[in-house]
Amino acid sequence: MPHPSRPTPLNPFALLRLAVLALGLVTVLPGCSDDDDPETTVGAPDKITVPQAALHPEGVQWDEANKRFLVSSRTQGRIGTVKDDSTYTVLADEPRLISTIGLNLDAGRNRVLAAVSDAGANTTRSTAATLRKLAAVAIFNSTNGSLISYTDLGSKAASYSQHFANDIAVDAQGNAYITDSFAPVIYKLDLQGNATVFLENAQLSGGTGFGLNGIVFHPDGYLLAAKTNDGSLFKIPLNNPVGFTKVVTPATPALTGADGLLLLDNQTLLVVAGNQSTVYRMRSTDAWANAVGSGSFATGAVSPTTITRRNTADAYVLYPYQPTSPRFAIVKATF
Image 1: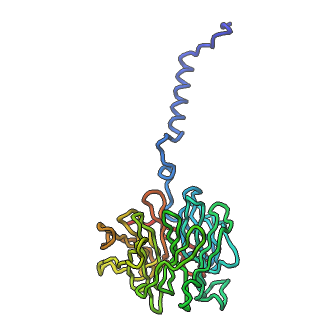
Image 2 (image 1 turned 90 degrees about the vertical axis):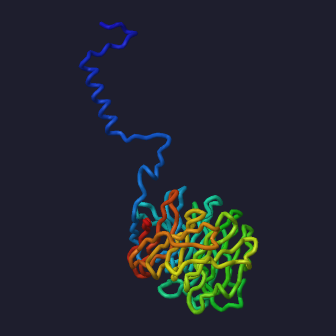
Image 3 (image 1 turned 135 degrees about the vertical axis):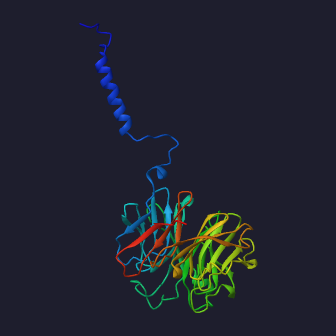
């Protein structure tokens, strides 16, 4: 009988069997380390198809903290979330959300901002009082969807009979800048809830069509905004908005139909040209005095609207299809 204070020694055959079992576990178990990036290891999907009928989302934002996309709804107004497994969940909804268009996730302040308009056709909450007259911004808690504020913007530019709040940029101080596609105006909404006209100029008009659309904040202290009807890009200094300039771009690619924008890095801007079914990559080496095309991504006839960043360099395009479609998709852009 072995000594009670010592473990029973294993014979050589038992040791060999344990070594084989250990080797099998090493082969089966995935490797991991503190340096592994979960997104890179698992891999983000190339396409997420969401079976939601007639939602027609116009805006999309990637929510890194919760590993989900946020999407708006032109037809139903509500704001929802989309997981990689195509699960859609309503995050926020309230009666004044007639059409939600552009979104901006201000993650550091735990809020999501939505441009609110009345798109008319196929919009379930449209009224005669708001049709083509509504420009507002609604702000929600990005975790639980509770309403933080709702601010009318169109009354700040009452000399124009038509309004359409479209897209939103947020600067480092938390000020929001909202484009109006039916009036040549960019609004500003500060953290205290004060709304003003930040910039008004006839050059920003779209005539009888859509004017200003996508807008982004550049960390060097200015905005970049696109005009849909002719594809113009504008550089607008925060400290001197009336000194805005038109970015010089080549004839090819023409950015007509410009919709959503994504500043991928300080020198790279992605432009979704919806009516061309194309995302253009534009680059600038002189602080957006000039820009040239450096690639494109063809989406097909899916009415792409806007684009969002996921991880460091991945960009995902929103395919809303048509207002009556039984689905929409979020697709990784490849150039």
